[in-house]
Length: 234
Ligand SMILES: Nc1ncnc2c1ncn2[C@@H]1O[C@H](COP(=O)(O)OP(=O)(O)OP(=O)(O)O)[C@@H](O)[C@H]1O
Ligand SMILES: [Mg+2]
Image (tube, rainbow, N blue to C red; front, side):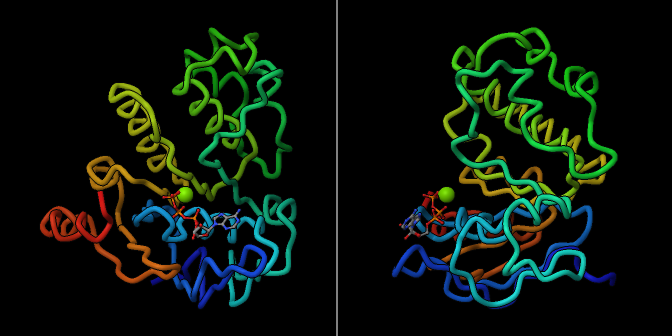
């Protein structure tokens, strides 16, 4: 099997004095769609932020395309083609949709043009001149994802993109993520909605107390659904 695109080995992370990751290890292969499942506080967001270099105190090893990320600043990691979509979506309220889209720098060739993005997200096209504050939750989520697709990053870290959204919008986000997988993106998706995750991903990783404690393929998740969801606490 080919080298993993991303390899985490025994990653530890701290917020000030308090330790949030306790030795997390994980491999992600190119083109894979992997979910991180786990209870509130298990360390899912911290794991994504650690990959992105957004946690100051980290130990262990995070290798992306053979390059060690621990010690690199977030903008350097972004330039390697990794992009993070935070759970608060990070939309600037006073900027328009188009201005929000143009904010992050393009880091690699092959990013989607504004025209392609507006084709993929027709409702954003209609609202191109509207301020961020005037968007619905679902539109803000679409904008947050569209914004990182423009950068050319091929490794996407998505933190709970369906949180708080109506079922019909959740379905649309699911379709979108499926399309991105078909286009060859590598995706790590944090998701509390296990039904949603089960239908999408190749592999599921369970996080407990700052570690990855189990990995399941899609078939196993469906077969042992009740036992696994009990461990996730949903
Ligand atoms: N900014 C912070 N400062 C201090 N501690 C934090 C901070 N953010 C998270 N933590 C702590 O780190 C641990 C892991 O939190 P994290 O946000 O990574 O969990 P999570 O799995 O994403 O949870 P959720 O499902 O609620 O989003 C928790 O104990 C949390 O209280
Ligand atoms: Mg979180």
